[in-house]
Length: 344
Image (cartoon, rainbow, N blue to C red; front, side):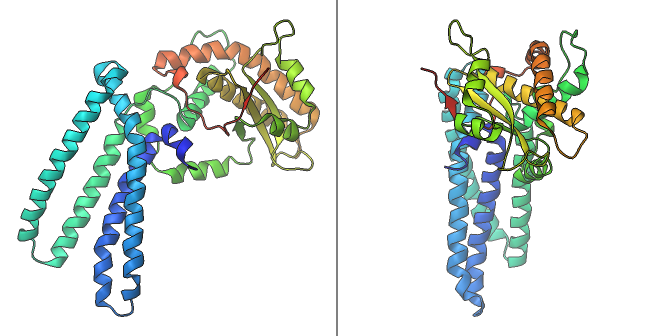
């Protein structure tokens, strides 16, 4: 359940994770009987067998959860409508059954042909490598047209670097889905390293609860609501509240500061993309204005005001730029903590 919210956002990574897990599981099941030949290692037989089955179970869960999103992608791409997902699923099942039968026949033929254990191990390693490489390159060809955390970060960074204060531009060129798919990592380790490097550079926490926003920002709740509601109709000016806060109790410091974003219940996926862009503008303003070892309240307020003015000018340009590149903002999938503000 911990990774459930990440399956849709990182569908290609989880699909490749499933491919790696099934290969590890099969390898462990092959190794397990061989340890019985060594008395000192015979106690590892059952753990290896159990671990192999756990890996294969993880493969089944991850592949099953990602299958629907990938089938939906191919239904829209090939047939032009989501209604074709049933046909794609049926053909996928038929193809899987056919290839399973062919695999059994080839396995029987190869087993009778390969007599030496060393040759069998070498052939198995070669076929496993082919399986991983083929799946890796195949997933690189899938061009998802919606923005997840990594793709959003890529597009926003390109946009801010190229717009460079020229708010009179109609649009700015950013990477399209095909270019992004070739650069997007399929392993979780590179992203974890990147997150670790950026953990002290004003991280953006999306979808925090209102209580957490008030607590970490150190401001009264009334100030947020008064600044984000229209007095006449009581509706939010924006469908989110953004403020600079801190991730731990104590004095604000650059190492502990973060950018907090809380969403209203009627916020859309486009609003989440706008909030992320807004957060990046605040982070850029904080980075450029804070020259001391600590960022005081006056600097924070100035950065928030600067970003607020910039977002109103840059958001229409960003929206047009990403739409022209082929991205669909209404399908944005950003990582959030899952909280929303309900107004009564």
